[in-house]
Amino acid sequence: MSDKIIIAIDGFSSCGKSTLAKALAAQLEYVFIDTGAMYRAIALYFLRNHISFQDEKAIANALLHIQLHFEHNPNTLKSDMFLNGENVELRIREMQVSSKVSEVAAIPAVRDFAVAQQQVMGQHKGIVMDGRDIGTVVFPQAELKIFVTADPAIRANRRFKELQATDPTISMEAVAENLAHRDHIDSTREHSPLKQAEDAMVLDNSHLDRAAQFEIALNWAKERIVSAS
Ligand code: DC
Image 1 (tube, protein in one colour):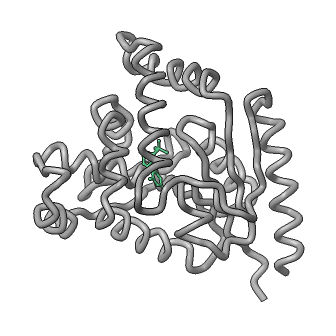
Image 2 (cartoon, helix red, strand yellow; image 1 turned 90 degrees about the vertical axis):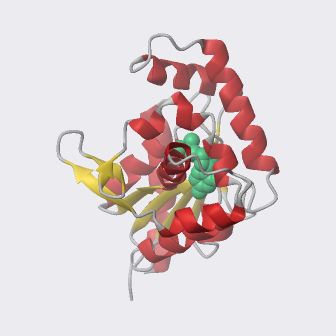
């Protein structure tokens, strides 16, 4: 019997989900998948190729020409997102993509495309996947579901600091607006909106540092791994 489990981490933007997911995966020697990066890479392709978000035919055709994969980066020790063989890890974090990605992630054909790939990635378990619909749609049978939340002002401040490193012209106001806009679209869209799975463990990290939140989540994971084996 396999003692590996699936850990699904969902929550609002800039809640520290990826940081937590990465740390858990490293500790447990599991694969980490940042599903937001996949939606971002698709959005980048649409923007570059002027695909209208309303044109279902153009979208279906564009998806046939998109190949996504993750590759380990030995310099950063993280996985980089590749779009048709190009490393787009930095591009997909830029404001131009961030301001459009929620619209792209709300398109049903885009979600079907991404979810099918995510389900294949998790078929052998031993995976930590972060996103918005992992515990509800991608892996409703995940052994551990964590729903991460944090105060919106604290999230905006964290994102601002992150973005400032690459774009010193960015304003706090623009970051807060973008976050609020994304939260709204992500949680009100018709197709698999962001919502807490009924059986998810809630982790509010507004006043927790990384180590404290990691400790809590790791204990949950250990419990679930024991009961799965
Ligand atoms: O986690 P992130 O900010 O990189 O996600 C980018 C966008 O993709 C965000 O608008 C939410 C959306 N997303 C989603 O709809 N479903 C996922 N599983 C992951 C991200």
